[in-house]
Amino acid sequence: MMQLLDTVNAALWGAPGVGLLAAAGVWLTVRTGFFQLTRLPLWLGQTLGAILRRSPDLAQEEAGSISPLESLCTALGATIGTGSVVGVGAALASGGPGAVFWMWVMALFGMMTAYAENLLGLRYRRFWGDSWHGGPMYYLAAGLGAKPHGRALGRALAGAFALFCLLASFGIGNLTQVNAIAGSLEGAFGLSPALTGTALTAVTALVLLRGMKGVASAAGRLVPLMAAFYLAGTALVILTHASALPAALDSILRGAFGLRAAGGGVVGCGAAAAVRWGFMRGSFSSEAGLGSSAIASGAASTREPARQGMWGIFQVFVSTFLVCTMTALAILTAGLDGSVPPPEMAGAAFSTAMGPLGPGFAAAAMLLFAWSSVLGWSQYGAECWCYLFGPDTLWAYRLAFLALILPGCTAGFAAVWALADTFNGLMMLPNLIGLFALSGEVAEETRRYLRSRKKTAPPPA
Image (tube, rainbow, N blue to C red):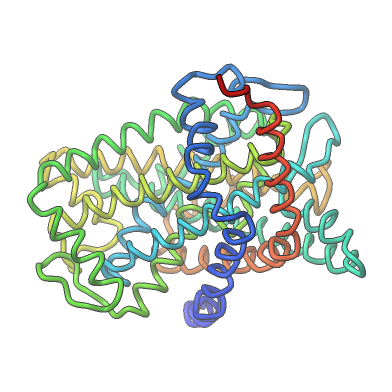
């Protein structure tokens, strides 16, 4: 089984898959005039600025929708999971410090991939039942399907995405997350994985009973607190080893191109390994290119697609440039080497600053991060199930999702992560085809939004 997964992942995450993912981000960046750079004050003001100002628009809810802030927290909760902690350790162990540089590159262009996904997710959403529903399956079926001779292709790709995302919800959104929780709690507190799995199944079931509203409400409370908690911990580690920060940054830049770092730390790898693992973990941690966050965007009360797209940029900024970077710098400045297994790297780094409390802090962070991912992805999977099979059988999906939590807690680390990488790559393909085909609409919607801002801007004094 592992050999088959490795073969599939080598194709999906080798030169063809990584090249397609990078090309989508570059193409969307060019078509929107390097929006993430040239309009940096705009999207920061519409996202971080709105949060700091406590804009009332963030909490606005309409019938059948969730607030923009809850949409962001749902997407961030699903995004900031094991990929931000364990995944970074795996990238450093397999791709060397240089993988962090390529994670940054992936994030820079991935910002516009996420922007396009969120924009299209809102633009093509549909209201049925008693709520809004969006995501790549809708913009593939309706957007790509509206192209000349594109109806059959659009519907086929929409179905393929929904199926692969449904499977991914069991992998990236369930098995990898609960596996990491169980491993960290067992290492830090000696808790049995079976006991952890049983408890997680029970508390997750309570939230899933409330559907999207329950997931969004839980994410809105959990995500801001967990992000602040974790960033404070990583900052403490980095400040404790502040003298090692220049060497850590040097190892990242040198390792990106296969050059040996001047100092010690995590062992270096070749440039090809750094690129592959940087891009793969960059995609895993931010989910840019996978299309998953567009599902949360489709339920937001925002009415302007471009504004919703900017939340996608902010999502990548937080998940990769903040959380993943701080994780990597904590590990590198702590001077860990390749002898420390990836699941234990974060705990070992925290131990250098917190002593015996380090593994407990890492386990608590992992519990919060991973469980929020479980909740977010359970909703992504539920939306895809409803698209494929209708809402009347949603109970079957939720039972299957809950039933996998206990086995996921007791499974082997390598098999779980390999399976998650496979599902990620498969759902990425139809989504990227849709983004290329609809890139013109993304560019036009962006220009229309910018023109509307000029018309409503107050005249100069």
